[in-house]
Image (cartoon, rainbow, N blue to C red; front, side, top):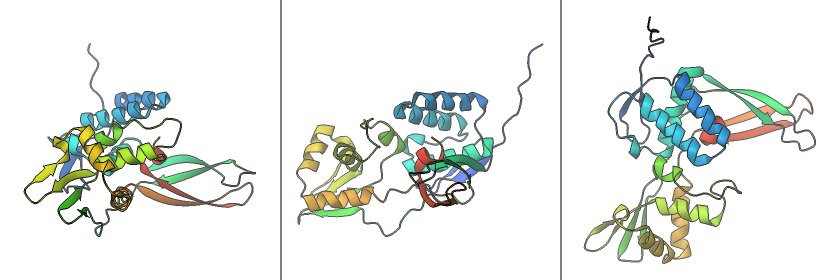
Length: 242
């Protein structure tokens, strides 16, 4: 006798933050959770991001191009999948910020209301002299997932990481005669263009990149051992899931 198929997963719907499109999904099952846990054990960021994206591809049930999802889209969608799969809260352990104490403090974080905040007044157009206008756009999840970060430093903290991230924000350049899309240009040409900018122009791109929406949660915990009033600012998938 063949084994029956158990737990036909229900379907849910959400709105993709960056586009407003409707996405249908099911919670991930044990088979997907196993792959996620195995990727976490490697501590390899690329493998973890690949497992997360593969999970989305498996669990999204309507026909959408997931390759265009922004980083904050994936964070939000994965959070919703996880909440429907294993519960509406995440149990984390955060060390006391008092270095003389540093004991583990448990905290329960509710997923309800955790959405990426997209700032509406951010300038995504930068004047390059009097002739050109540079258009910026937030990078996709896959673009960020494929970056080669320095494994010895927190992602995005050194000059090379910052340069790579800002490079991904380049969308197009308006000239007097045409619009040039960076996706149609070689990485070498894009890097040469970036290198020709003034420090002020580059800082404007960095400022845009720093507004990249993400899931955030501010937590306050009074340490039961030393009574230190700890304040934590959690953000991004790494803090909530990894």
